Amino acid sequence: MFEALPEPKADAILGLMAAFRADTRTDKLDLGVGVYKDSAGKTPVMRAIKNAEKKLLETQDTKSYVAPIGSAAFCNAIIAQVFGSDADTSCIRAAQSVGGSGALRVLADLLKQGRPDADIWLSDPSWPNHVPLMQAAGYALHTYPYYDAQTGSVNIEGMLESLGKAKRGDIVLLHGCCHNPTGADLSMDDWARVVKLLKDNDLFPFIDLAYQGFGDGLEQDAAAVRYMASELPELVVAASCSKNLGLYRERVGAAILMAKTEAEATRALGRLGGVIRSNYSMPPDHGANTTEIVLSDAALNADWKEELETMRLRMVSLRQAFSEALRKRSNSERFDYIAEQKGMFSRLPLNTAQLDKLRDDHGIYIVGDGRINVAGLPESGMEQLADAICTVLA
Ligand code: PMP
Image (cartoon, rainbow, N blue to C red; front, side, top):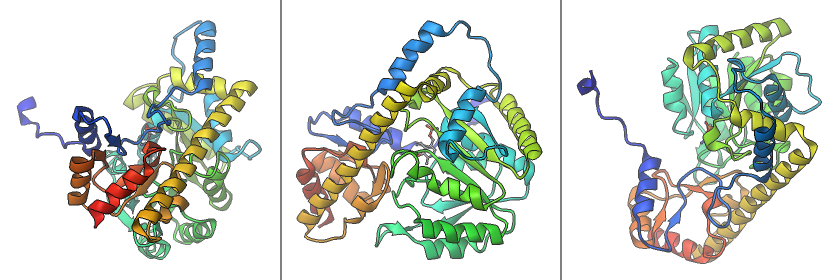
């Protein structure tokens, strides 16, 4: 059996993490791993989560099963967060999922049942795990150009031209906000053009929403999803609670669908429950239950929003300080895009040799495509970092 298995593909980020841990330099810097970090370099449990966990510990009186689609109260809370608390949600349904990744996979399986012949279109570049997740669900994949490295913004013309070639019924995977890995988001004018194309060519929107609250704010970051929901008859959203509630390892998310009618929505949710049942039967409860407490308790909710906003503002100011330091050191505006971009990531224009040099000479660890985790930038030490980057670029 096992002797027939080929070697697994090495994971670039895990390899980078191991090399970072093994590095004995005290001034080393990890800009690789995609988790939020505070100024001490820690990824803390959020205050409201800690308090909700205490509450849960005191009040939970059974560990019996919930359901394949998880908790209805959790799902309704996430639907309200994504679509707005006063939205008409009559044709929207959700299933609790194993993080955003689990939502991506079960939604991909569901859409495969609805349109077996559809292909999926991914942005180039995209979060690398989109590829195996969608391939595992049996899809043929295509890419559409997305990023203009010269300007640090979206190549909207290239994107529209490429998606114009998709066949009717194909599925387009879109990052709802805070694009990973580029940090470049569509403007609302761009979204209007994309939505018109989806409508005209009968393309299906599959929205990955993993960073709501990390870009312009919790409500603002849902603007694209809400706009699509108002303009298009159907869509799905894979929402993650990993980042905005800091629940990474607890595996919390929601697979959300919007159908044309209430009856279709209910039937689709039933099918989604079947997909989940045949994969892992039911999602874990602890993180979702904790989230449900945070989102339903007024004081915990307010405290969570405050802490999330502090995190967001920290990333915004790190972006500004970093682009300012690079502007000074390089005596150019070529890095100004970093301050304009959204969320946790931006890309630096560095090739493999330059990245190796940054690691070997300066102890700075960055993933192979030049993606940096903005939350890992050093509050004090921005000048040295800018200096190291400009030195290897020279
Ligand atoms: N989508 C994107 C774009 C992501 O960056 C991530 C997390 N790195 C996810 C989905 C999934 O996150 P999780 O499964 O941990 O919730």
